[in-house]
Amino acid sequence: MASAVSTPDFAFQQCIAPTCQATYSIDQALTSCPQCGALIDIRYEWDKLPLPKTLDDFKKQWQNRYSPTAFSGIWRFYDLLPFLPKDKIVTIGEGQTLLQKADFVAEFVGLTEGELYLQYEGMNPSGSFKDNGMSAAFSHAHMVGATHAACASTGNTSASLAMYSSVSNLMRAIIFIGSGKIAYGKLAQALELGALTVQLAGDFDDAMARVQEVSKSMGIYLVNSVNPFRLEGQKTIMFRVLEALQWQIPDWIIVPGGNLGNSSAFGKAFIELHELGLIDKIPRLAVINAVGANTLYELYEKRGLRWNKGNINTKVIDQYYQELDAKGKKASTIASAIEINRPVNLHKCLRALNTCNGVVREVSDQEIVDAKAKVGSGGLGCEPASAASVAGARLLREQGVIEPHEKIVCILTGHQLKDPTATVAYHTTDQENFDSVLGSRGVQRASFANRAISVPNDSEAIQKAIQLYS
Ligand SMILES: *Cc1c(COP(=O)(O)O)cnc(C)c1O
Ligand SMILES: [Zn+2]
Image (tube, rainbow, N blue to C red; front, side, top):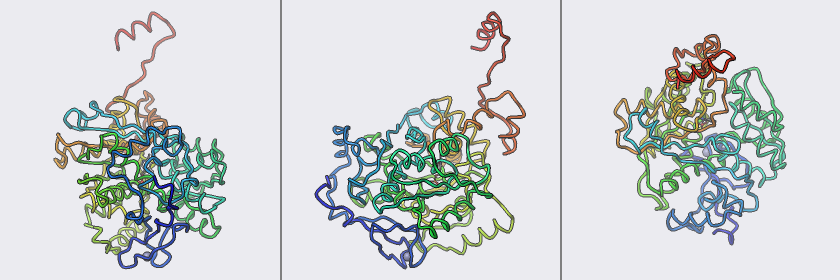
């Protein structure tokens, strides 16, 4: 355990651009390099820190469940993200998530029985994986003495921030949302949990741009995934996946891609574990975009954009964004959590794809809602964006990129109840509801709908109907 050392001495921030690599102290709140504008990494002088000899040593934490940091699914891996003293950690028991073997979904994806696993991050206290990153960023905000924290959000980041600020009572939460673009479950959380909610006339990309300006000029701590501490927390999703697999490395990790914080964090997790000699193989990474918000797919798969040792050809990116603007093209998908055209972690994600020999795919809203129905009928359910991972797995299997016997982990990023509107519209018998929520997105059919049966208010008729349908 690292208790004897003041760990921040061994942690620092560093610009990811190889031409710059400027370093900064850990107690600064940076979202980009002050010298060159590139993204920032959290780095550690590992050789000066106490580290486990094997990943299995983390099991010892389970014996100490009454300690909040040992109980947390993030902070029981403290040794792998020691950027703050332990007494600054803000935890509410996040990361008690589940890796589940899902044979029913494996069949749908086209995998051999026993090879598909679903990582249910919707089991986090605010119902999405965002709590992994928020616990880390919020703790850092606490460490640097912030009084206000802000984010732009398609919903889950704001729900998570609202939760940490109301539970801890350490900071005021300010959330920026686009108009009409937030799923009801998520908006309900932000409002009920007491966050100051700023609804602006624009979409997520607009909200993201404004929150960066406003927090800079007002000195508000920004917790969007440009915040490098978020990604430190999100690394632990991979640690828990490996832990659940008894430290076996799967062949593939498949994750939906929005702002690309998760995929970036996963890449960082694997490169660090590998460098530390704690794993000997790195899984492949597949990042799945929605067709209506497919910037990464377009740049990586169509235009050949690569990490290229950090010398990213930013002209290709600028050119693409100019094309989007010229066409007036806005992100549009039923998977609102990935309805993002200008992913802020693009550069880090390219690095992760390089580390993990990655691929990127796009899936349609039809494929997303059908995959979501399959996930739901096979178990615990997820929100639309999460199902993109399963739809993507199926596509990669169809294309022969994934073999039937390979071990696959799909990350289910958010809880089923986050977006009841999409779920009810899929299973509804009300064509108007279907058309307005899903038809308008180009979804033509609900291939796996579980429709309610209408019965008269009469017990004999009900019994007949049950006999007929069950
Ligand atoms: C935020 C979010 C995503 C996108 O994750 P990124 O790290 O931004 O790529 C996907 N699914 C859900 C449910 C989310 O809340
Ligand atoms: Zn720099």
